[in-house]
Length: 117
Picture 1 (cartoon, rainbow, N blue to C red):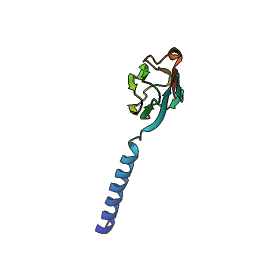
Picture 2: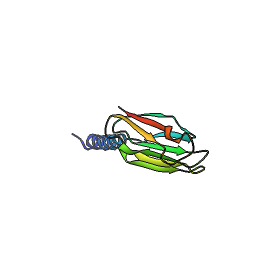
Picture 3: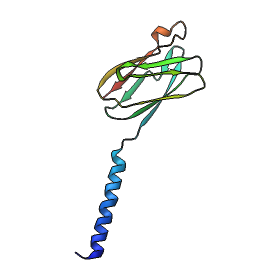
Picture 4: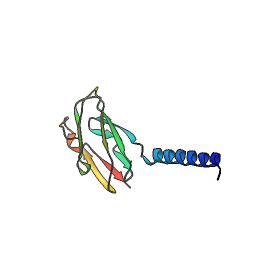
């Protein structure tokens, strides 16, 4: 094999290795969730096992909470201060999330679910 051909093959292999390395790192899926009196919009979040996710939370009215206990995800959601929580689901199923800061009459019904497939 001549030197030029060897250099071309080595360069191609390096290019492919870098290309596959970039693809191997999963990109985060960003999901925007609004916490309003007394509902999460959307109330159902579809995810996939092993897919990194960022839930971007806003609350336009009053302070809310977001608690997804199965994945140990919890944060306050303060009006005017978007909050982001990151996690990667490691199991399939349907998992409830709730508002865990009292936000008025109707608070006890403020819930949603994450559906992981």
